[in-house]
Amino acid sequence: MISTLLEGNKRFVSDDFEKEKEFYNALLKDQRPTVLWIGCSDSRVAVNTITNTRPGEVFVHRNVGNIVATNDWNLSAVLEFSINHLHIPDVVICGHYGCGGIQALDEVNTEDKYIPVWLINAYKAKERVDEKIHALHIDIATEQRMKLIVEENVRLQLEHLQEYPFVRKSLNDKSLNLHGWVYDMATGEIRIIRTERPAKS
Ligand SMILES: [Zn+2]
Image 1: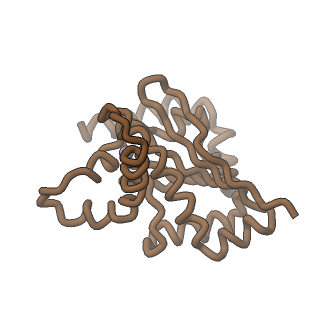
Image 2: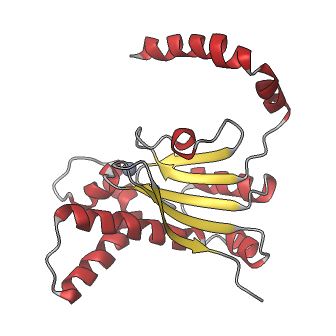
């Protein structure tokens, strides 16, 4: 498998890179992405493919469950760089149906060390959905419940994002919009879950 990647790179150089040398040369100077994408590490949610974008357009951070944890230095540095230095005006948090990370929220007997600790940052999404289902006294199919948790997790992570003082400041300055999306692997479509725009003054 690993040799496939290197062979693929050779084909990329001889086919794409050579054909579009001007485009790739322009990218040597700098990058001016207009979107920060916070998505899941899942191999099936390939940012540039599903958004039909090219290199240089989307600044990307991916982790298990598209989680925003304010004690995560990795994401914190990505956020600081993209908002304060690249001045990116739009941040997208994109979840996806069929997310293994979200499904793992239901696992109780696991020998994993790190995944459960990481998923604490998404646990409230599961709690909120289960409370709602319980309060409504309805039966809901497992798959549908999971979809609701995926969507709620996107809302929850948008909340976490706004705990960063410089994110709040940029929202107040009207220089930043936050978008919560979910990618549906069954149709290829992105659903808009929530948009946080600057408060009207
Ligand atoms: Zn996932």
